[in-house]
Amino acid sequence: MMKVKRLRVISLLFAVLLSGLALSSCVSRLPERTPEPAPEAEAEIQSAPVELSDGWVLNTEFSSTLTDAEAGLLLGAMLEFDPDFEYRPVALIANQIVAGTNRAYLCQGSGKTETGASLPISFWIVTVYEDLAGNASVTRLSPLDPSATRTTPLVPQESPAVGAWQIKRPQYEGVLTKESEDALQKAFAANGGFEYCAIATLSSREDNTAYRLLLETEEAEEPRLCVVTVEADPSGAFAITENARLDLSFYTQN
Image (cartoon, rainbow, N blue to C red; front, side, top):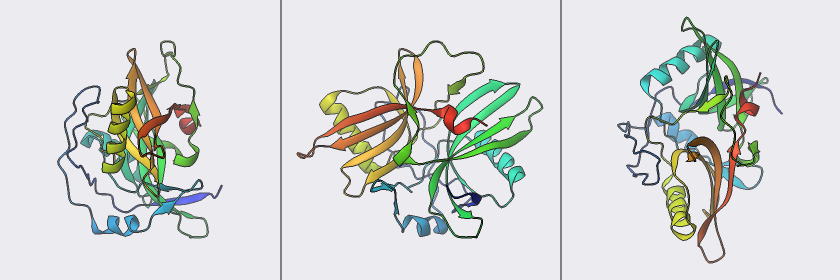
């Protein structure tokens, strides 16, 4: 794997592209953030689709569920980590109580190799540690490849141990792309589904017949962070073909 020298992002603005879709299947109705205009630089990256290794296309449409406080903590930690390291924050996905608090953030960005060559935009999980005095620092930066996500079987787990990661339900609604939201709702209507809160659309097939989504779900009061695939059969009917728990420890362990 190429070593990433720095992460170059489209903008430090917390631009939120919300379509106003009501997530009727959300565990609890969440408020929407006020939409802000997308910066011009953002359109430049979105004009060049990013093809993944399995023929899917990365979603570069941007939305954020971060509160100002969550975004501010991440910004301060990233500036301390590397002032030139820019990013585009998507969501706070989990917390871990230790001697202080670890926080896992989902971000978007595009990086450079050590030789200065540009890398395409990608998803990243940024782990931030906040000590008991309130000082925050970045402890890990991991690429999240939608075509090769690390997952674990979706089976009931015992009560989380002390110090385990706790899935963080977003305070604001996340927005799936319109096409992936429509496909997910059709799959629900045809096959039934589960309660969820949207985090992000990760990728899709170029012909829009399949989508890979990151959702916060809940079953028997157990919050889960899941990678869900929705696909259309030859007749065009959509169904959920994959539902697996994201292996968060793989992306956050030091």
